[in-house]
Image 1: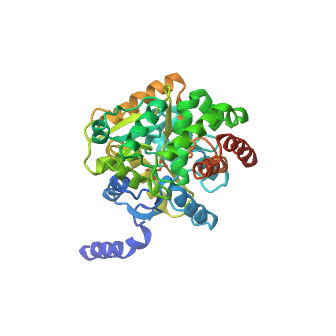
Image 2: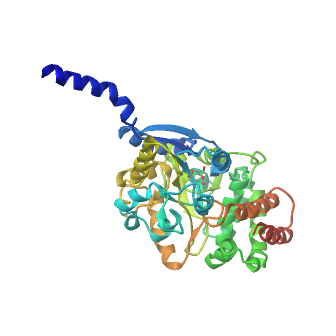
Image 3: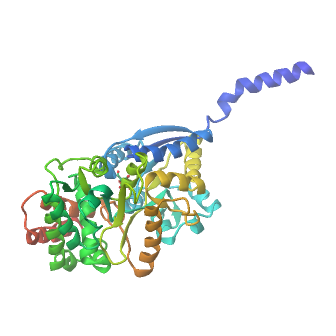
Length: 419
Ligand code: BGC
C-alpha cells in the first residue's frame, strides 16, 4: 500500500511539468524609459512578479511613443503580437478593426471586476472594442497635457508671477530673455511641438474651437483667423527657446527647468514624474499651473491593449496584468510616481500632491463646463493619419519662417488629404 502511494507520488512529479502550465507570462511593449516613467512601471512589474508572473520587458525608448508605435506595427504585421502593449485612444479601435485583438480575453476580467462602475464612461469607451461593447484595454491613469512647469527660484528672483494669460507669459519670457535666462525649455521633436500647439490652441481658441478643429476637423476652424493667432503664438514661443532645442528629449528639457537653466516648460504631467523622482516638491522647488484656458483640460489616458495570443500562460498573463492594472492600490502608487491621476474613480486623492489634486478638481470642473477634451497630440482625439497630418504642419511651421497664414492654409490642405 505504502509502495503504491509512493509510486503515485513519483508519477505525479514526473508528469507534472508536461500537464501543468508554467504560470502567467506577458511580453509587455512600452515606451516608459525616463527616470519617473521607469519608477512608475516598476510598480506593475513588481506586482506581476509577486503574483507569480513572468514579465518579458520590451521597452522602445522615445517620448510620446512614436518609435514604440512603429515597432509595434511591425510586430503586428509579421503576426508576432506581444501579449500587452502601451496603446491608447482610437488606435485601440483601429487595431480591433484589423482583427488582431478578438476574442477580447480580458473582457471577462472587466466584467467580473465591474470596470464599468470603476471608471468614467468617457474612459471606459476608450478601452472598448467590438463596437465599444467589450473591454480590450485597461487604463492606468489620466494625464493632463495643458500644464506649465516652472522653476520657482528663477521666477521669484526675477519678480515673475505664474502667468495666467498668453500675454502675461510673453511679457515674463521677454523679461527672462533680457536677463539672460532661457525662458522656454523645449524639446524640438514633432510630438513635443504638437503638445505645445494644442495647449496654445485650447487657450487662444477655447473649448468649442478645440473640439471643432481637433475632433471634428472642421475646415473653417482649421483655416480661420483664430488658427492664425495660434500659429502667431507658436512663433513667439519658438523665439523663447535656445539653439539646443531641436531634437532634445522632453525629460532633458524638464531637467533644464529643474536646474534653473530655463524657466518654463509646457508638457504633460509625466514631467512631474521627473521632478518627483529627483525629490523635488511642487510649490517649493517648482510650480505647476495649467496653461491659460477657460475651464479646459486636455486629457490623455495611458492604457494597455491585449492582443490575441495563444497559450495558457500568455492568456493567464493577460488576465493577471489587466486585473493588477485596475487594482485600487496599484492605481494610487503608480500614479504618484507617474505624475498622473488614477483612472479609477474611487481612489482617494488625499495622499497626492497639490498638482495632482488640482488636476483632479480641474478635471471635474472641465467635465461640467464641456472642457474635458481628448489630446490630439497624444493620440486620444483622432486616427493616427489625421493627427500625423496636423503635427507635420505644426512642426514645419515651428522650424521655419513660414507665415501663420501659410501654415493655416497648409493645415486645411493636409487634413483634407489625410481623410
Ligand atoms: C504618454 C506618457 C509618457 C509621455 C512621454 C505620453 O504620450 O501618455 O505616459 O510619459 O508620452 O513619453
